[in-house]
Length: 137
Picture 1 (cartoon, rainbow, N blue to C red):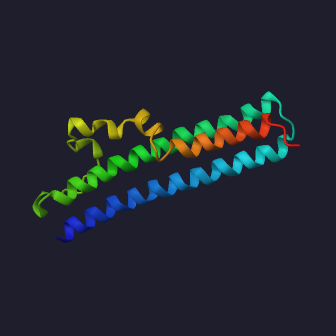
Picture 2: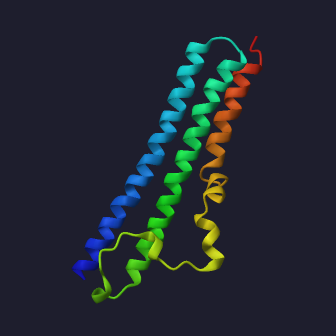
Picture 3: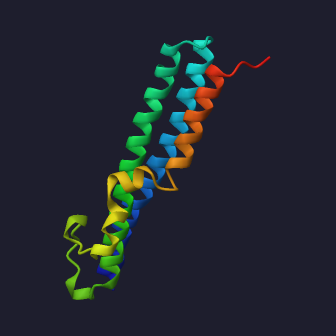
């Protein structure tokens, strides 16, 4: 039982790091967005592009971390079900068999537009567009 617990703890450590990375990316995205607002000052197209580019990049990186997190959660579940004598400390999530009906849960573009990633970045993009193009008088 000790081998299984050790292996599960190793995988859980990776899952935790992926979640922390995702959280940190969201903080960086908001921080950069606010910094550009503060320095841009006017509503020109260059300022909008400079604000949106990092948001889109962070959106893609955040999606990548969430995709890895989901794959490691799948590996965790696979190891959880294994017998103690089958534990080999393999950390390769590609060796896990996934049912065909669940394969879409691990695709980059499905995660890109998932309810855990899309709303945050859409709100950031919408906020950017409102701040630059809607006059506040």
